[in-house]
Image 1: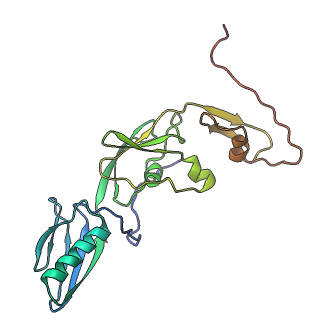
Image 2 (image 1 turned 180 degrees about the vertical axis):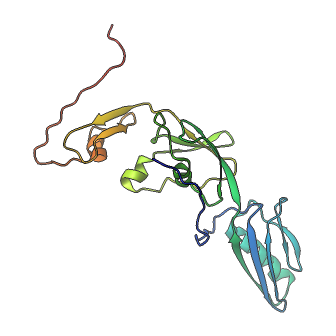
Length: 228
């Protein structure tokens, strides 16, 4: 996080999953072929509808891509005899998300509707020096949806808990609560954040021991509270 990107855009060739939720600003291509041959390439309107060729408007906002395909296919099959339909998503809308708390660059970010929490963390520069990487919160309409530990990604390559964001979501970086420092014969000496209940063995995993054959560990604790 030493620098932040000046632009943030996902590749236009990113595959769109069937559970992608449509909304105003998404661009749909509908092609009719058979007894009726037409093509319509247009955006879902602000009211959430898409104007199908010949058949007129159909509400699509809030539906998954697979559900929208089923609805359109059924409508064409029932109302246009001998006509088949092909549906695709040609352009994805942008969404606004908020980055707040102990963030390196807090503010509003306009990103692709395919953006995930990880994308936003990198795009915003992550937390500042006081911000937590192990307790990143995603809030939607005031409700906490996710408590994300970024160590899972950077140390284990685990993206299973990464989530896709929606319009108006808030990414909140709380303050760091607990830290430890590792020095000596390790590959990555430095300061680390830990969660309550983390075992001592996590220290070795995070820092990477260079000598496992003859291991000697010295442990010290600093207590900021004065003894009474």
